[in-house]
Length: 398
Image (cartoon, rainbow, N blue to C red):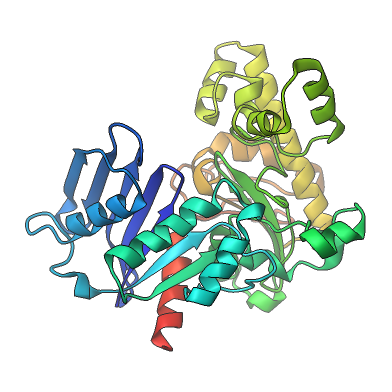
């Protein structure tokens, strides 16, 4: 069976067509600027490295999905002959709240529950829903499965997910830590024990998903016991444009002195902060290049990012009561060897050491020295494959 995996953003749509017989990616692509002048479409088909690329205005996600299906079945450069080859669609959905602790078949009932969770994810949930409805409109009768960013983290105990605010806010508003990047953390949690040569039930490790958006998770016996993002993806370490952890009183102080309202303030914290706010760019490569050229503020931004990450790793060492491994993944985690080495330098006093010969770009697996007290790993993530796997499992039981 072939599964079409959809990741719909507010004005973008990423997609992959995965053949579940061998879990190979048959085609993948990106639609950008949906609903904006100059919508851009690009699809790459694995066999023959065939590319379809064009610019054509698309008013909404339904038009974008129609373009995806048109490209996938293109006679010359497509990946399949007919839409009948697509068995189901799997969708990344930001928020499952406490309602969804696992992936779910999209039905009238489950769709209503997903829509009811919009207040917990007002920026991301609506486009996720639009992606599902677009597939339903263009491919009526085709099964759709929702895979939630938050679901993998639902094993956290109350001591990890509750905030120290009046308990009534949890009871009435479900204010708590949920965590995100769940499909990435789940994939890495499944891969890490293979490199350690241990049963997942016997493993304790820390996953560092480091990209423009970043989050950590503490894993014990294959389950999450803590994670760095909170009610929203704003909490945690310093990110590309997100502030991460912050004294809440800072908001009131800035708003009182600038005239900003709460929506403007949150927009600043989500889109204009992080190392972009501290320095020259939301891309760590640009920040490090500026630092290397002598920009002191850029160097400070790098130092803050490194320090905050070290603090989280240290606290999660305590959360798991001694880790077997620290695992790095995603854009920075997979590619920035210098940044990872600098982070681990902060733990050399614990006997954790990087092997420079192993810590090279493209290397996958253990990158620590043989005598390191805790293993350090780099594992490429795959956020689409867990979505495809869950979709296959659910529709196979229909």
